[in-house]
Image 1 (tube, rainbow over the protein chains, first blue to last red):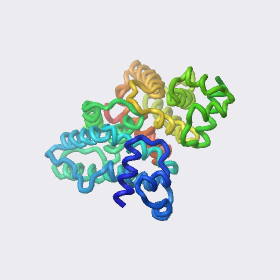
Image 2 (image 1 turned 180 degrees about the vertical axis):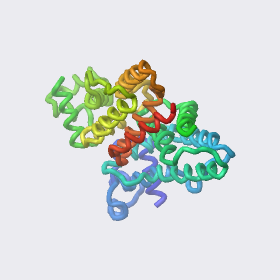
Image 3 (image 1 turned 120 degrees about the vertical axis):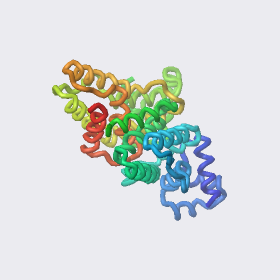
Image 4 (image 1 turned 45 degrees about the vertical axis):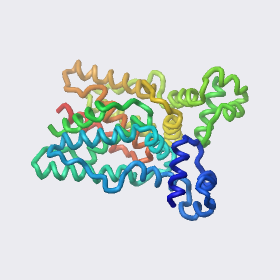
Length: 170
Length: 170
């Protein structure tokens, strides 16, 4: 299992254009049939590895005592993470792997949980808060958009997105 | 020229994974050298065709007399356009074609011109307006993000994005 995951990681890192079960099987030293049987389609495996690379288990949302600071810190960490060349390749691999409409995106679901947590705490402190979908649409989506389409993302960009989403409730 | 463009269009429409100069040349009945000489890299040609497919010359922004209605109409047209399967493939082809950071995205530049025009007219009418970058970041980027990552986009989604961006200035 670890050999399969790291082989996919290597192939993505090398920027291999067409990652197929036979290519992965050869690199990992396993039988392609094993891969077909477990994942059915290469896009499923590719997405699984990309999600693992783009989210870390138990990664928690910042807790600074202010929603603006929480969101800013969170957005900057995400921006710096997904602009690292290897992560960017994973993000693009995710775009290539998806063809049919997905009902939910596992990477987005992780972000939703974190945003929910930050909004809940701000609510308890009595701060005015944007909704969780607003945070995903106006902070996370533009960051992923910029990275997927190879537009520049500096630290000021996530800051600006957070200021904008908070202006919706001010 | 037309044969080259339409060959690329066909290959994208067929969902061909690895579109190279030799593949295009064979389909278009031209010499690969011609393509190398004119475009240098296949990503340049791919992007050129994608941009042509995703923007129409002389396409003008709606002019309804209200910024909210203008933006809503505009965003719905774009959402419907990029969710058509062939356009979605072009959008994804654009993601695949880009590797190095681009200083500007021609499709985004077309949207910027249209947004500038709508904001200018609203300004003249004395309406409070979000900035043009805010419209691109919070209406266009989330739409492109959703389509690239194969998340569902219905007519309500662009409406919601427009309401949000207008809430930034209310």
